[in-house]
Length: 284
Image (cartoon, rainbow, N blue to C red; front, side, top):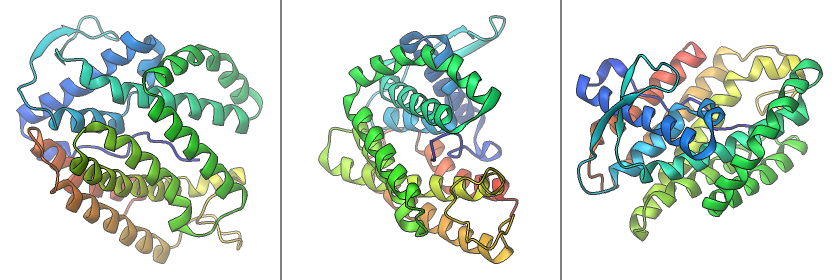
């Protein structure tokens, strides 16, 4: 089962210094908000995907975001930039916490031996934070639980259709992204953007996990039953083509959004970061 952890990244070399500093401020602000809302352990769920979600939500709001200096929780000797407005980080923080909870629950059910024991020890620490996040954002809780149900059913039926198996992840992310705006037109655009990025995440993650899933005898949509242990060059080219379709359609949706600020940073992620990430992950 696929979760959102780390594939929606910037292409740092192509960002201006001030843009990268703003991106880091959003990243650190999300980390701080997670700790304040859900406890220090919740900070470990921080990822680039949720940073993108926070940045996107900020970009749709009018006004200039004020920045302040503060100490890093993990390195008190280091000062970081933080956004003063923490409200914009509540949605991505809740999404991160809810998805982490279900990831831990999934791992607890799937793992064996010492790994299972490790998950059993840390899982109770996230029960209350999950309840709090679900109470604050019941729409996200409902969306993620529906995703779990639909994804599990398809995997249990050993679905071999990539479009079908990628759909629950795409729908989940589309439902979460559309919460970033109250405007109905923008909601439809955000829904499309989320759907395309969700498909990208699922396809890339399935390709990256292929060899491990073969060893563990776990479900993977790219397994064909001929006992292959790695994806062929032709299969990688087909995956690359599908990923480019996802990226192109996500960029087309992005151009329809009424972005107030940080367009260069978001554009860097969508136009450059997604392609660079999948090429690096798949070694293409």
